[in-house]
Length: 259
Ligand code: CO8
Image 1 (spheres, rainbow, N blue to C red):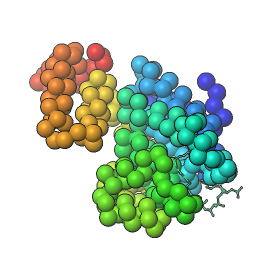
Image 2 (image 1 turned 60 degrees about the horizontal axis):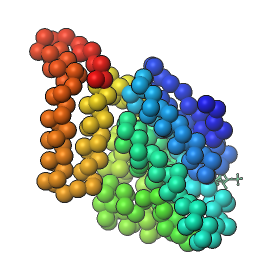
Image 3 (image 1 turned 90 degrees about the vertical axis):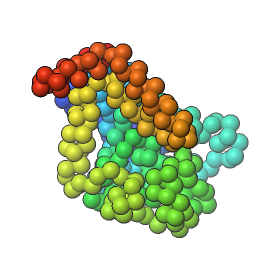
Image 4 (image 1 turned 90 degrees about the horizontal axis):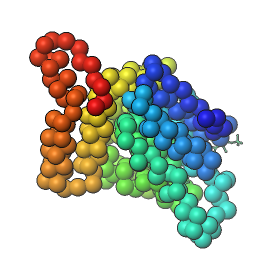
């Protein structure tokens, strides 16, 4: 499939890389880009060979937010009737394979929200995260006020959302927003390495692990633990559980069949 606002490629036969590609606008997220992103994510999710997806941008910007000129003239009726945002911004939430955000430069507004919709964020040393919508007379609209406090706690989330100040990579790592920081020129290599590791495991176990961790944000502790236990038990019905444990016992490398 040919895209105009993103680029896609496959690394090592197993890792899909989606690069946001509107460099002149610092990868501002417009409707066309978000539609293409949704299509690419769904295509890779359905591809049996792909074990993990990486979402990245340019060195200067992962994404500087939703496209401001594109939405500046919207009325409430346009936004509400057209289901602006939710229509194509929610696709990423339905993706069952892991999605890693590899963030270099600015991840602002919708860009920060998009990164937070991924399963984890690897940041380059120059990454900057922020929710500056307040400066435009609005508030975050793609989950920022909900996911940011869950990631960094209320104090820092309020600080960022109310003052529009940016968080650098070091602060973001300390606060728990990103999982690792790497030098700018190593960002993609590090993300690919992590994605290849994930892709080497049983896809069924990986999907179950993602589903179960995500459940932690949707349920109380007892419900979450019960959910986890059900999936844990269910995995004993797979070939890959037998293979993984047999390989350990016999000191050999497992061959997972994703079955
Ligand atoms: N939308 C459209 N164009 C943008 C955006 C954007 N969000 N950000 C930057 N650009 C454009 C600039 O207009 C400029 O274009 P041109 O060269 O034609 O003038 C080009 O990118 C380069 O930008 P700058 O010259 O400003 O570059 P600087 O290095 O000086 O500054 C900044 C970089 C700090 C990132 C600066 O561009 C900036 O502050 N950008 C806006 C950041 C922002 O406010 N983001 C939040 C947007 S609102 C939002 O995301 C709401 C999300 C709600 C959910 C999604 C709804 C669809």
